[in-house]
Image 1: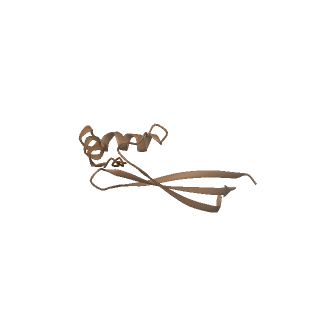
Image 2: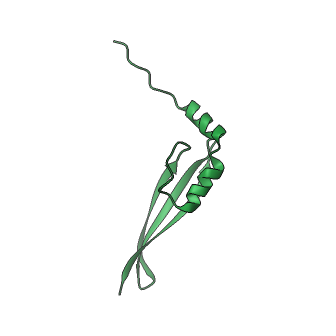
Image 3: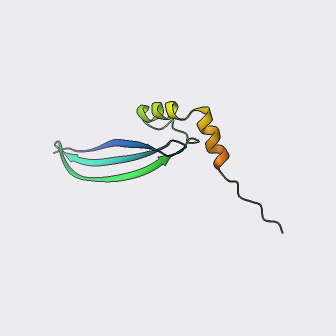
Length: 85
C-alpha cells in the first residue's frame, strides 16, 4: 500500500514567437492505481530560462527559439514609459 506521485508533461507550441505551453498532470498513485490527479499550466517564452525543464522541453526550446525568434520577441516587448513629474 505505497503511495507515489507521478508527473507527466504535455506541450504545444503557439504563436508567432513560438511560446511553449506546458500542461503537467500530477497523479497520486496507490499500488499502480490512480487515486487523484491535478493539472497545472505554464507558458515558456523565448526569453525564459529552461535549464530546470525536462530534457525534451530544453531540446524543443533550443530547436524553436532561434536568434531571430528571440530578437523579434525582445523587440515586441514594450518598455513602460517613465512618468514625468
